[in-house]
Length: 160
Ligand code: HEC
Image 1 (cartoon, helix red, strand yellow):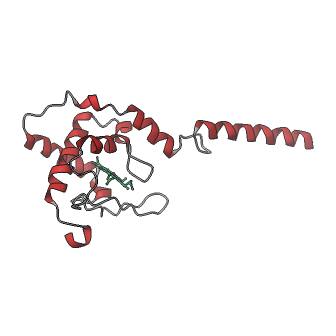
Image 2 (image 1 turned 90 degrees about the vertical axis):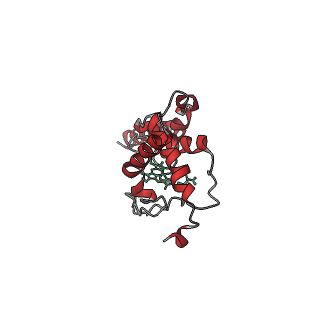
Image 3 (image 1 turned 180 degrees about the horizontal axis):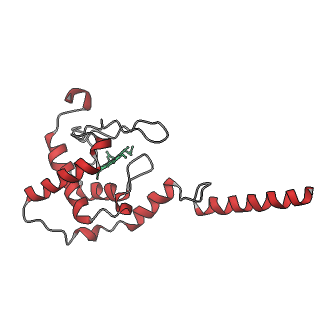
């Protein structure tokens, strides 16, 4: 009997090792770090080459719509990082304030598109894996950079 128990244990241990190698959790789902890596690998800056807009205002209007339905719950309606979204683990997300004059992605369209597409392990969704189109990523990146960051109002505390 003891030997059978040992065999069962070692098979279970081997299976756990396999999962760890594949970067998945106990339920066989990919780990957060793995998902971010997959999204980073799929990001293709050339996908934006064919995105064109009849006017800047159409682009920003679309970006505003995307922001409202896709981003505001975490980033806050005006992008101050105050959406107050609580994760299933009970943490309240506190994304950066897009209005901060010293925002590190200011002026960097490529970096913002990449961030929206690939997300990260700290709560930013991987929109590219959720099939958000390049056109919408372009629009919302422009909205964040020009409308939100463009209306610089200093750090969150001073803005309210
Ligand atoms: C479920 C919550 C959530 C949603 C929805 C969300 N974000 Fe985020 N986002 C975050 C968090 C949390 C961070 C900060 C992650 C970190 O600490 O690196 C972040 C970071 C970012 C950053 C990088 C900021 C920086 O200074 O590095 C950008 C750009 C961004 N989000 C844009 C968007 C856009 C655009 C949308 C909508 C299409 C969106 N996010 C939707 C939670 C969210």
